[in-house]
Length: 179
Image 1 (cartoon, rainbow, N blue to C red):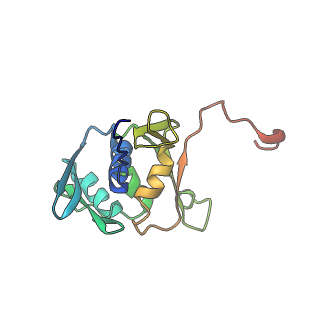
Image 2: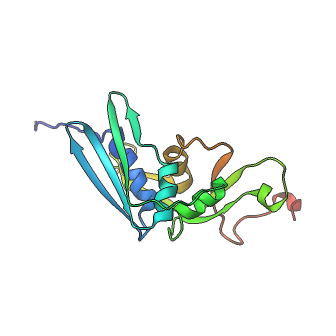
């Protein structure tokens, strides 16, 4: 019998793949992944100062995985843009990104007194290789909203909810009750 050694992707590699999947289609963003004695690192390069400033607010500088620290850097010169609301922050960070649909803050529109924000992503399944033993190809299949929930959990934002857009005409009305 052949000597078979199974190696699984470490969780920091999966986290990096999620970051890449979330920003994959954005023409202003590039990734540089390194492994050094200090630990793994990912540098996100961007030449749009507003986007750099937004990403610096949204992404942690480090992410801990047991005894391994992933270092996350944003390479670019941030603008002095001040973000008054989480909606502005996400709209700036995802401008030009095909994964992003829109953000909605009902309080901004005068509908609610409580401040919360919906960040809505494109309606599609995201797949990337991740040594998933439940998949015959080792792929992880998920939604952008699930990736965003994990990636931005340390951003310190409250009442921000990540959603998936619906296809027009595909969502039926339950029992004809809703307008």
